[in-house]
Length: 388
Ligand SMILES: Cc1cc2nc3c(=O)[nH]c(=O)nc-3n(C[C@H](O)[C@H](O)[C@H](O)COP(=O)(O)OP(=O)(O)OC[C@H]3O[C@@H](n4cnc5c(N)ncnc54)[C@H](O)[C@@H]3O)c2cc1C
Image 1 (cartoon, rainbow, N blue to C red):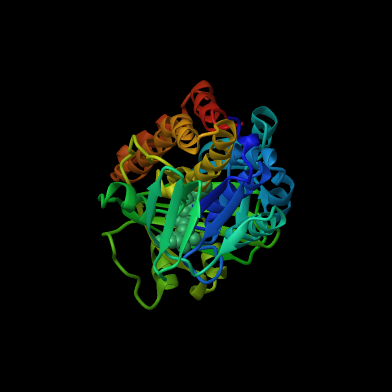
Image 2 (cartoon, protein in one colour):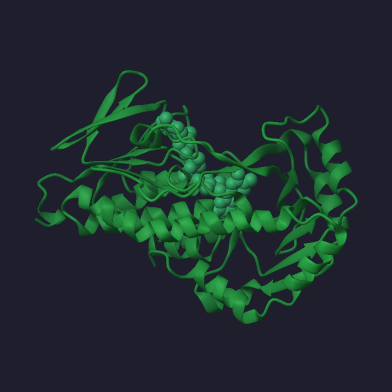
């Protein structure tokens, strides 16, 4: 039986209205599924400051007819550079050429803007969004799956997708508790109301990094990463502490920090989970951070969730049996997403484990002289191999 012969539209229960859950809902609704998104929070919100939507995710947005909106909502980076802490270039890339070469640009965007675009699209496609619905557990039988919520309410559908992030309750329902991994460094993020250069900078110093991304004509998104014990808290003067750590780096680092309101600075420890080989069973699966949380070092966590979303919709569309569709989705996505988890962890180690000045100079020299062919190979792997 093909999916088109169903009497009613198959319904998919999506737990979590983050970037992954909303993109999945849009991709499914576009293919004739009834998509229900259940979000724990009372309203949709964007935790975090800015985001890089990379080539691979922009290709998915293109396939979903949303690339123009994302493009307009953010800023295309025309060049990227890895610098040392004094702002001296270690390696530079013309991202404009990459867009021509790999089929899409890299866009820096405010998270709240991206969430607004996704929410507006979801409404336009008739996605049902239910807020204040904290998922608790699921039950399954031959005819469907039921999501049970903390409020005592429940909802039945043909498939259930856990898009509920790093601390996923769906993942816990499927596989029980499993330990997370702390990478050894924490990240502060903020947005400076300051005209940016359309360049994506990341500066590497001893046990610390500082990144800048243009996200609007008057907004620079920045992130600062530094070694720290897990769970450590900021004092009363975060900005002062960041200035003490990073204020003597490149002049533009000091400028963006100075321009950022203290209250807008947030801190997140870098945590992921070791890759797993099974993401679901029966009518249930995982997507995005719930399936494969990444350290932020490659800016690929949300991009991988976006890839998952389209792959899931294509798989469910191609299989009459939802369980078969979900297993097919997992097969197409697991290896690639897990590769990003491992690569991202490795980039973090490379940046943070080398502290002595002489060793850092050696590492930077190796990166400076990395052959273009090797960089192209990595770029090809990022840009290609997703669902489009
Ligand atoms: C410092 C930092 C920088 C980053 N930079 C980038 C970047 O530049 N590019 C990039 O691609 N990625 C980046 N990421 C990663 C990216 O933020 C995540 O991978 C992405 O947000 C994951 O999306 P998601 O939808 O899977 O999960 P989430 O965004 O975590 O969304 C999960 C949703 O589920 C809801 N939820 C949770 N529990 C329940 C429940 N029990 N019931 C119902 N709802 C529930 C939550 O409220 C939330 O709305 C970065 C991450 C960090 C920490």
